[in-house]
Image 1 (cartoon, helix red, strand yellow):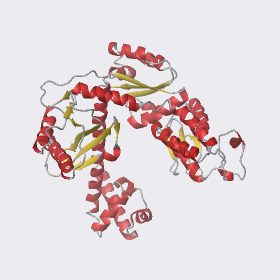
Image 2: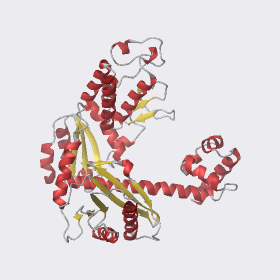
Image 3: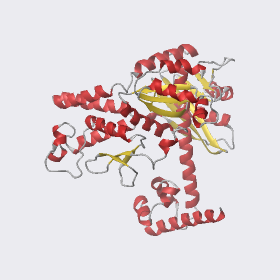
Length: 475
């Protein structure tokens, strides 16, 4: 516990969410609190208890992060969105969807926000589950003030009390257009998903539009919403600028690495091996710049040759097409992976392009021409940035690998269906989705969704069901 004592003492006694992270900087537990420091300290009463679940969790904790909120009710909403994103292994109570309520945005023409006890296949969007009903009701009161939606079960002909107290904009009388209403719904979704930065940008854009049109009352409402939310989108630009400058100095780079590209390889027994490239610009993900590579030239399991192929394809093509290069390339792996990447860059004439690697075990950084690794403190902000890049590249590679695996599985089944030619296979692969998705459809639904004939849809589903029955019998 000693390395974490100072960290616990520095935590604020304010509402928010805390994240217990392991040696790989992955959250193992995420919790909410009325007072973060007090709640975190209470956890460590169980430190050293190897026989208890709480003690086992604390034995894995190497870092504690936090996000402040205005109150505990909002912390509840943020906790749930983070648990959904990270799926920490010790947050079992939030994985049990049967025990706790959800927030639901209905699929009506003018959607409503409701607290419900279970999910249904009704087209609505569900958020949660949430562990505290009392706090959830408080949160909903706050949300209805910030994101005014109708609460009436059926749309009336005249505005009601909710309009007069500012918690509805009167779509029933046409005082708010459906487009404007759905913009508010989208902003609420962004908030519940934890995407506060997206929400603030959207509100700012609309505020400027209203100001330009001299709709100052509407602009003022949006301004108040932005002000209320501004505590959660921190000034990342300033922080990132400092981090990138520190990274430049620490690694002795020729310039501030505003564009960083990170590469990873994913393969299972050499099958459907893929590479990924993710891009961060000014310290933030630039997802439109991400690239995926299906390995073409390597047979079997050879991560080094696969990395060589990906680096050659990325930067060889950049040179051919005169694309802009990166300020820093990051390789997921140790000295061996770095060596093969550097050999390709030298071969194609990019000897000056800065490249480093991050080793999996101790998260040391390696650089060509330097024998010893760079060893930085685990709480170093620029090491955290490199970790984020590495984790994002790994996630992106794994996601692509799974997509290919699903397509290959579906393709192998479709090859055995009589009367299914190349054109039909393409339709099913593009629009059908996975095997499980297709199996859940009726013949009519499958025909409508993919554009194949009802007869072919019947044949495909029969083949899938026969295979499932055969596997179950064999098991």
